[in-house]
Length: 266
Image (cartoon, rainbow, N blue to C red):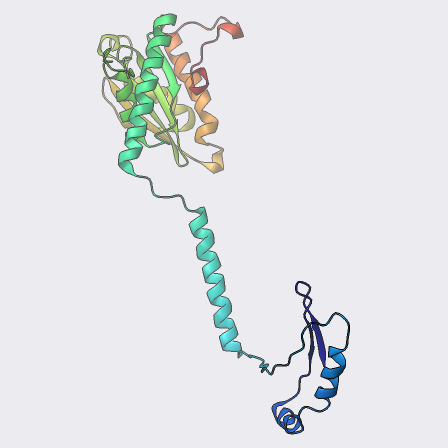
């Protein structure tokens, strides 16, 4: 015999449970003493309704094979759910390139202004959108060098007259593009410049020409080489190389006058 009380509607149930054979025998005797019990219950103050019902309780058992199959299915579903949660949605290459060009065009305007104010011939900086992709970084630098259209509502590019080295950090590598305008090529060899910077952490030149050179430094956790960690040191190295050739303002030791250009300068 079990008693069940609903905390919400305050239903009060008395459940008598017995095997099927015994139930049939009890049913033949009109469930004695059920009638007397029901009459007594109806006389209790506050009782508004009294009724009876018959239902079947059956225990469902699974064999070991079925249990394991159900567990495996649940674990598989949980694993797939976690994988989908961790996976990044696929990148649309068209949208990605558009974002790269937009960032590069905007940075070109900023470089033009900073170079004009400081009288700089060369500029070293970093961008985010290429995420270490060397070809996207080249697109970004070329967007910086595009001739600016003064009639456009939002100016882009305009820094083609300024030599530059641009860095982009990704998970697998640090991508670097060096650019030397034609009129400055007698003073600075583009390949020599990028090779000097890459040599600091064992990087390699990917392509080289008089105007554009590309290089990468792979991530190497065994030697503590991580793109974001080494990027600023390489910007300093690029500037120091220019200083030795008289192409970048000298560092006079005054921190206020030190000119190191990266993302935080914009």
